[in-house]
Image (cartoon, rainbow, N blue to C red; front, side, top):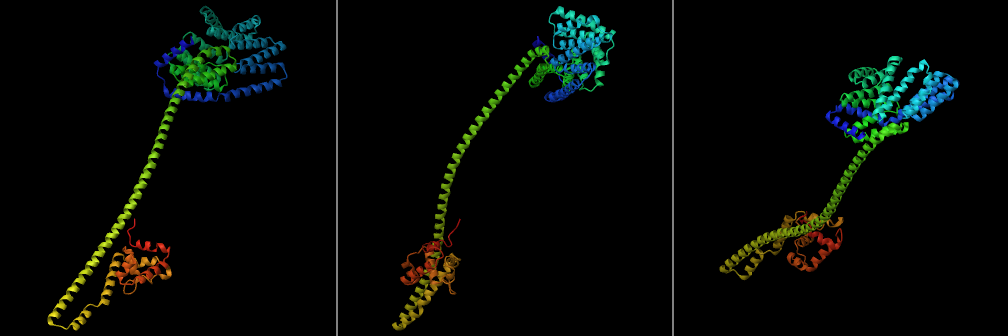
Length: 536
């Protein structure tokens, strides 16, 4: 039966679009109160504790009856077992006092609690036990209690014949309460609204209840009852949106009042299920079931159990789907991570190989540059050599040609051999020629390596600097020797022949400068070879 009701609600909700903004706002508010309902229940518990403290110190029976009655009223929507305890306690105090009105009032209270607990036969039997002698001031509450019991029987009886019988009895008592007894304005409103709803005067009931609702604090208990009735009316009128809003407001009022014997939150959970809001449906159904169990509302718990099982199944199914999706997502992400890690490992290997290859190419490039530098250096020196010696050779050829022409002229003139020899010696001044040769060599070296003397000094200890590099006329003999070494002529015999020095002189000069070297002696000539070399 409940399943059919839920499916019908789903079809109806699909036909009428929700006013999303207003409904969503109310649902968020309800979410907050459901989450914090313990705070409001605690407030009712504090009021109950205060009444218990007053009861403990009460001195008269009348005071005890009054406080027990208040405890009964506090507990009836909070915890029915405790409400029954204090209703029976009130009845004991009433019997002890012998006050008939109090006895009937207490009996009615016990019957009302039995009605809430679903013990309708026991409740009616209890009322029958005092029906013969009901004081005038208690007849209204007596009739009103019978009305609520018959209303409950109409709601929960499945047999059609019995349901119609109880409905007729409820109508009789409703008419009696409305027409023959003086009700409080709020109780009269409740009974009148119930009568209008049962007679399908929905528009009339709506106008009356909405006017009263507008004057109340929407979070108080009476406002919650009116909101529930308005939810029923709008549902009958086919306005599911407004109906849901009023049931939500009723639920909020119930929670704020610390009420655990309610119906609105259960209806909202069913509506959320029909609208496929499974998370909210489960939270509301779970909260309602917890309240029913705590309150010991057996019929409400039984009624809710079928719906809760249905909603719980949908919720668990949704959780399972979410878990499956999450697991799939995790597996996918994990797979991507494994693939990425594998790619990173592969790329690192490739990177290491590239670094190795790059280093090899770099080392090879350095070697190529070194060889290229040496070849360039050698080419430069060779070019300078060729230029120098072509110039020297040309000069010597010119001189030799001049000497030859002069000798031939003198021979034709018949000049004496002795005079001819003297003239030749004047023409060929070897000392001057050697000096010119040294000068040309110095100029060439300084052209190729302008900073050669200064760089040579840098390779010597401080006290030897400026002595062996150059003089006012040009380079020193030591500097010329090492200039030839820089040009690649390292053999002492060739150096001696080139500079017209003895072999021992060349050896001594080389040894002397090596001994004056700033660093290691054996590295001195290697460092000389680097003077003026191209650097990268």
